[in-house]
Amino acid sequence: MCGMKLIPVRPQEAAAWTCPMHPEVISDSTGTCPMCGMKLMPMEAGADLADGHDHDPAHSHDAPDGLEWEDLMPDINRASNSYNMVWKLVDRDTGTENENIDWEFQVGERIKIRLENGMDQDHPMHHPFHVHGAGRFLVLARDGRADDNLVWKDTVLVRSGETVDILLDVTNPGLWMAHCHIAEHNQAGMMFSFRVTEAAAG
Image: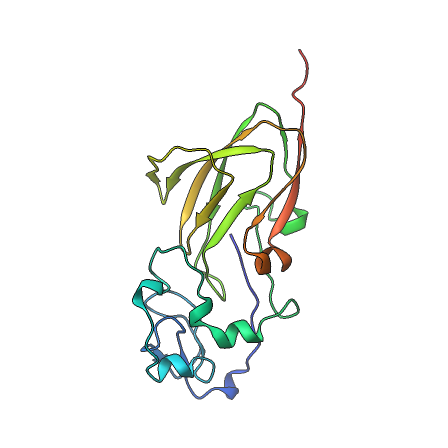
């Protein structure tokens, strides 16, 4: 569902690498955390965590709490800007990304959409996926398990590592947007427009 290019750091600049979410994981080379799959950061960037900074396990990377990790990654957040990070929505069928995604629907269609928020990225995060006024959707399943709470929504939280299936009931013609509802993410690319036309007569 997303991708991000973060602060470029040359390996020789760090003597050790650690996971921002699991500071007990320390490595002498780059790689990914064996506990959560997140890319390791230079020890200097995660020093406050690795040095024993106490953090709430309820806000940990692998807890399905729906929270961003702002309180746990201050160095990354301070160093991130629109020049060194890109968030992506990717259409798996076409390979197109963000504003190049070219969807078109008709009023009356019901479209099943699978949202995948994979862990193979620089900075896995939860993403609230929002669809503007083209219609509402039902959350059908999370990670293949049926969702019993069948209520109409326009936003769904897709947690890191999670796959969510939604059913969009297309009701309104026009040019609409879909995007991550975190402002920093949509402003860094994570949005696209799609067109809805009236159903053909006859």
